[in-house]
Image 1: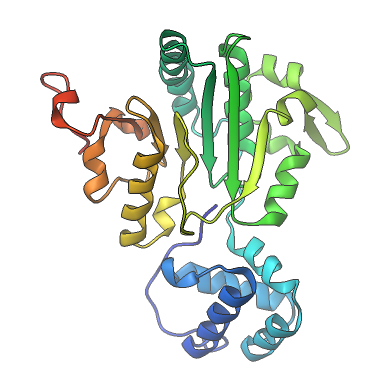
Image 2: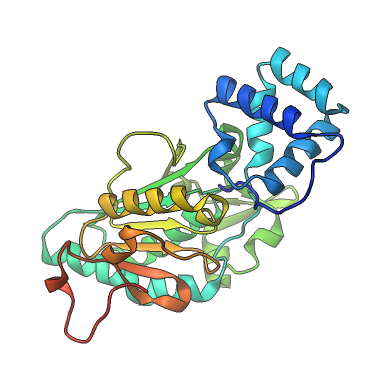
Length: 294
């Protein structure tokens, strides 16, 4: 899940600041979603695009949003970026396959924990959590229980993800053996195997909402932080650090960075891929010669 980036520029004549402020207030009231925490330049364009889809100017769209209870969810879906594909950035998933998941599986074995907890925050159409499920299914021993949670803001997008039906372009990076084993042609697309779909629990979540984040050994939150304001990025990363145990992993997008005090709680395991390992909460946990995340 992401809200589009901020860019500078004056008011859209069809969607001036006052009209956008009314949309923000209605979206908060109807869907509990506060656009004020997000970089708003492209978000404003998406609102304007949704209004044009409804054949409304700014003022007419405000009336529609006020009068039609379903429009808030439709707008929320339009604000959510849900273009993804399986194994997006293959080198990142290669490191997950070769380093991160084996390390977590070994730690679970060594500590006699019977469960591995994985969380995809901002899961969009489900391609990322299902990619993770395919890897975990191939790597994890049968005695290890897998808990894979996928969260996003839009109920509409989450429902599509549960269906597990994808156009061929979304499968471009899926290895041939996995495609043959876990996908079947259906209509103009491909349906993911029911057993893999059942591995993933989809749930609506706003990362800015109060309350504890779900505990996890690995958190994927790629291409989401970049759309929040800097203070909100810092707060989210701090909450990720609280949700992860020492030795757990956080993966963010390649265009993203960690900010604030929470970055001191992570070591850049594979910096180029933005894969970070959660440290103990004291400097003694660092091996000699290893620096904290920079």
